[in-house]
Length: 340
Ligand code: KG4
Ligand code: ZN
Image 1 (cartoon, rainbow, N blue to C red):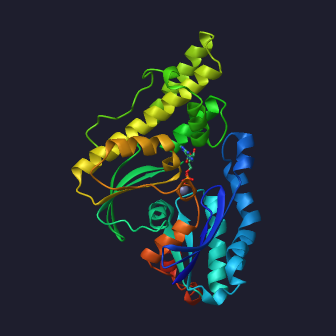
Image 2: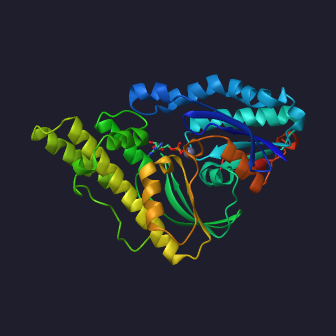
Image 3: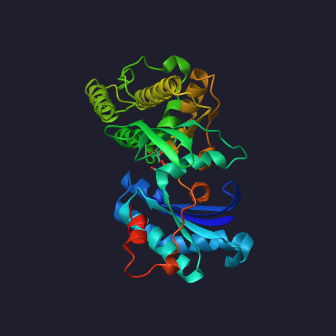
């Protein structure tokens, strides 16, 4: 089964064709990140307008590379229905609905967070259940127990900011650019081992008995350190890199500790990392050093960040289509499904 998927939940405009949930035929991503670099973060209306500009050309590219627009070979469409920025989401959902209606194809609404996990099905391997999932993105930090494709139990998550948001906001404070995760990692990489600071930042909730996270206090702690360095006239390239390194260490320490705790509590066959923050090299190093007894899946960086290939994969393994072209005007059930 070939699924054409569309992803427009944030600042990436993406379309992909994936066969049987694992074989990528085409995967096209356009990012408006350069535009957001100028403002140091995403302005939702700007992101939505970029989606409007790029979505049809991106779908066209995904189709025409191998398919010469032969829509016939596509069995179903899939689209990110949420969570995400509402303006950006609407463009993807309404476009997918229109295409499904015109082409008379079933349309599968997909949850963006669940879909992130399916990046682990795209690189030639198949994870086994039950699995533990850590989804860490710009908007979310969640730990889940995946019993099977249809049964996912939420174990814990952030009580305030997501890890990615913390990285983005701290990078903005340190004037390192956007997106913050890669910018902080790059600044940290500039340090020699003997230049690293001792622990000056808190590791929030690292020893709490639950599987929750909290990153907003870390942002405040970084601001306090930054102001102190400024007051002491110690703000320079080296101290900025040192602070960036400490931020990366603090966040990855907490993420790894909570995954480790969850893996000791639940007997799982695999651990699956997903979401933009899991592109972080230091996180990979630490988790592989800490957890030895459970095989860990970590997608390649291009599958960690937003794309439509994992949307197609999630749609295949959770096939719950709406036959949009058959929906009657008085049928509210399917409409509710699309906007949940
Ligand atoms: O999953 P994603 O692409 O979009 C959302 O669904 O939010 O995640 C974006 C987040 C941003 O906060 C970005 O700073 C972070 O992922 N990120 C990284 C890296 N690459 C992206 N964080 C740490 N290290 C990276 N290499
Ligand atoms: Zn995402």
